[in-house]
Image (cartoon, rainbow, N blue to C red; front, side, top):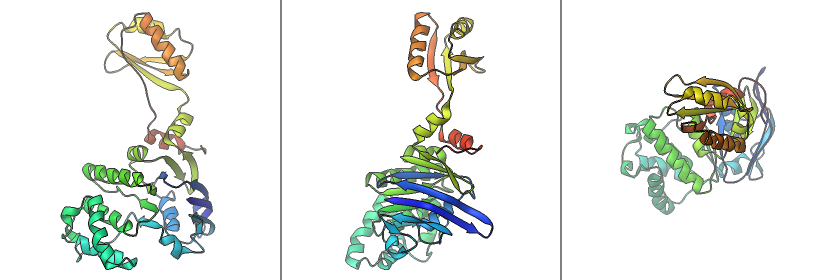
Length: 311
């Protein structure tokens, strides 16, 4: 569905994108992670046919963004990180204007617009002026605008930027619905845990280069190395330390600062963990909980951007 080949963008001597290559299949939800200035928005602007690359190309459903941008625009819905709205229009009128711009007949728009407003939970604001809507409502209205022509691909640059927690949850739920509808979605965001919930794949971009790409789980596994285990105990910390010190896969045992328990680095496999827990129970170690620390997406981002590729 989307194929990015050798995408490069230079602004004078500054390289905003450096030989970016990426392939996404239809129906994929892809999260683009990177610090400010890493190249996310530049990539999205090129995909949206709003910026010409210095070299390389992007193909959406086999059509080049460089050679046939008008055809590409029919297949994409683009929501920028900063956007303007027409303040003197009501929400319904705003969508009607864009529907007409895409050549959708009036009779079809009359049916379509209420459906879109319902999808983004704005049916009750149908006759409200756009400038009176909250930021979260404006975000959802602009998402509806990007869906007006039923695009196959959605390019959403920081769709949850500046939203309060409730508005972010609402946006996340809408994106999950769009995913179920089979849309191919590209999302950039600084709210990393939400990307992990929504995305099939993530890509980490740093200084214009794609330095990691894969499923969240795959990247977590590549980074994890030693697993960190936390064991909470009913009592008998000394007994537990003596037991765990005998395991060849365990190192750096430390007592918890809060509560009764231990934490330690573990080099064994998941099967080894199962065996360790069974033996601990047989040796009457009073375990209340036995939990592996799972590397979250923020940990992944911080670790990858220290340096080095993980493609």
